[in-house]
Amino acid sequence: MRRLLPLALLLALGGNAAATDHPTAATVFGPGTISTAADEGAAAFMPDGAAVYFSRGAKDSYAIVFSQRSGNSWSAAKTAPFSGHWLDTDPSMSPDGAFMVFASNRPTDGKGAVLDMTMGGKNYPGHGLNLWRVARKGNGWAEPERLPVAINSCNSVFAPDVGADGTLYYIGCGADGGLRLLRSVRKDGRYQAPEAVAYGADDLIVRDPAIAHDGSFMVASIKSAKDQPYRLAIAFATPQGWSAPQDLGNAVNGGTHSMAAQLGPDGRTIYYASDRRVPGEQADWNKDGDNLWQVSLTPWLDAHARDGAPVAGPWDRLKDISPAFGPGDRSVVFTRSVDNTSRLYFSSRNGDGWSAAQPLPFSTQWEDIEAAMATDGSSLIFSSNRPAQEGGAVLDGVYDGQRYPGHGGNLWQVARIKDGWGKPQRLPSLLNSNSAVFSPALAADGTLYFMRTDPDANGEGAFRLLRSRLVRGTYEAPQPLPFSDGVTGDFDPAVAPDQSFIVFSSKRAPAGPAGSELFIAFARGEGWSAPQPLGLTGIEARLSSDHATLYFNAPDRRVHAFDLRGWLARHNAVADVAHAPNP
Image 1 (cartoon, rainbow, N blue to C red):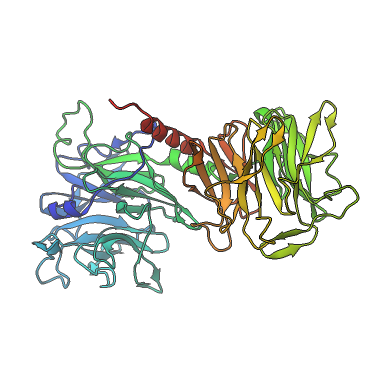
Image 2: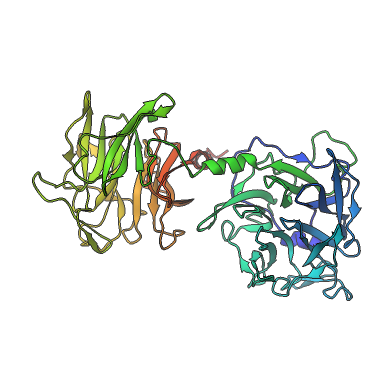
């Protein structure tokens, strides 16, 4: 619905994402019956989809009305029995249909004066809002009850949505008095003290949350400045919180705002209010105020299901890791645990599948891990604990302040020859300056990226990422990447063939104390952009040969895949704007 004037001063949409339009377009919901010449918003469905409750009104007079489905049509809306006397708006149905939460200016005791709102030192009579809960009673409704003061801590509390476990998401007053996205967990029949929800950047203005029944995603109206329009965006739950919100594109967003989102009974369709217009439409239902619109979220949800999901391949055993692909992804080398040690295995494409994985002939004695394939498939570089000199002792690892007997690593190179593979050769000591050298990655020009502890830190320093250029067949002295300081651990680089970007794991925020997050950084002249979290927890990053897919190992110790094309397209779009000539 169109927000009341004082609330319009408070609410604002935004997003910093200028996403590519998605092909799924929004359509008007119930034209002429539900969407009319009045102002509609916030559609809350009964679980079976047979009835929908929504707000309708104009100016300062809004009520909650309902319509019932008959076949493919909806009945004329009637005012809900608990509404019609006060300004009632923003209905939200519990997933089981047992109760509804809504916003209202009705008196706190049901008898006194309606709520006023004070903002910026100015009073707005009758425009305050608190949250109320009304329980289902037979085929009707009981009397509404005002939610506790802990939730209604001011007179600007609105836009509720109810999760499957009863957790209430809403917009209310934060500790600083400003409007915030909050949530209150319902436990033992009581709402707990509300807590702020971090959704996007700290300066993002967030309104009207719509939470998935399983808590896996949330759609909200966002903007980054007050003079911008509100736009719908989707974010996904991760172990560290909500992922960066993704703008749903111009095929969904339109008009001066897109707000009041609620999920339909299928959990995959979003219903929202917008003042956008249907081109050429002159019907009476499409005159003034907001109408309700609907759009399927299936493309976004399906894309997210693919992003970061386990992926089938010859790495079919638990703890198979780090697939390194040959040209065209027609072959792959990966690490497999055999008899409590790690060996390199090889597989090639066999039609639409893969051949049975076989151990590489040179990888039968030592602990060999983390192969990197040359972009032309002519050689491999890998890390191994094999002795630095023939007849010597296996390498012990010294890192994280500890010694790991037999688990050290140096970098070795092996050529791909006509009949198989050559004999591994240890790379120069300039690179292998201690026994904690791991995770090689190769660019098209032979530049080598890898991780190593500081040789002078005696194993006390953190892993950092380094780069060594290959000049006329000789590796130059490795240089640390500028964002990898040796204080916070960075691991497992995967670099694009043209070195335009790098993906790696790190202990830096938002990583939790026991995990590593995946980050991406883009080349910027001779340097790099600040690393950005991909919203994925994992290690052992590897890229497909077209560098569009990221492979990594998630906490379940299996190989997962993530589509990087969205990240690359957004970066390229920003770069194009930045380098565009001035008019």
